[in-house]
Length: 365
Picture 1: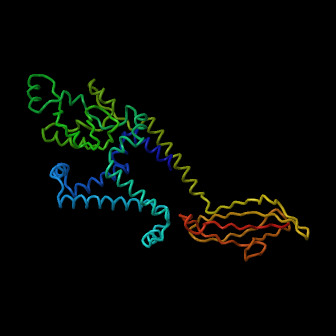
Picture 2 (picture 1 turned 90 degrees about the horizontal axis):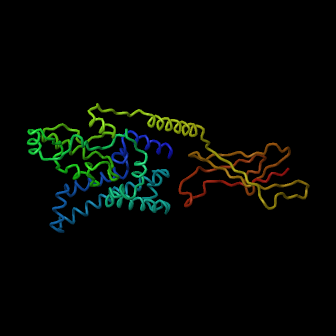
Picture 3 (picture 1 turned 180 degrees about the vertical axis):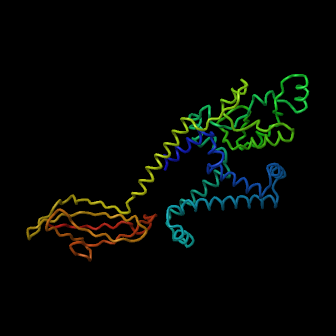
């Protein structure tokens, strides 16, 4: 699954750059959720700046308390949801509510709650810039055909105001569509000025595209001054050639084939998954014991693994040794082919009953 995830990221990067970072990364999604809570409680950025300048008041303390309480609630729900993936969810919820859950469950919920609160509520996009390795990897994997958020400088430069642009164009002088309003920088969560070219901090969220298109509509100019584009088209526009987009190319085909191959291997492995396992270990000391009646006893430790969701019974017998008798030490079933009951695997086994049954049979020829 990790290999499939890696090749999927490579394919997404080959098609549209860091589109994973801008739209699907959990850090981005949870940060946007925390932003939404912040706007709902405190208002937009200008309102928050005004309230911060005014100082603390009863209303301001109440707003901050509500915001952080909601953030912690979302973070706690996130941590709990992750932990529930690793055990029977209804059972674990009941144990958590009655304080009978394993200590590891509480520890991991606490760790995930704290990390979600700090990363999405406080660090936010700083995680993308300083902590996440993907921007560095992506920069090495991208090529000239990948679609990235791009400022079309061939159309936007030279920057000037709307009135000055009309004056320059009346006199036959060049004037770009960019009015230098800096709305693209204001809406960028990382503070990137996309007009300076592709940068490591850009997460390809496209907010600058929306902001620029709104400005272009207001001044009556075509939209798309900032858009998803590739490096090839910038050169082709300067040369007066039509734009070209190549989503399907050798690189994307290779990644898609690798995803299909690895996915097929994983599907075959899951389809042939075994729901039981057995491991037989011969006792080292002594290797064999001669009994008084002339027979020889060998001791083994047999470990049985039950991967089903319910208890199962396993029947033990010896093959290839005529006259052998099989006995399990301390078991009530002392027949020639004893049956062993094995409970299903349970998570958090360190705090519960061991999921394995370890009979010690002694075949005696």
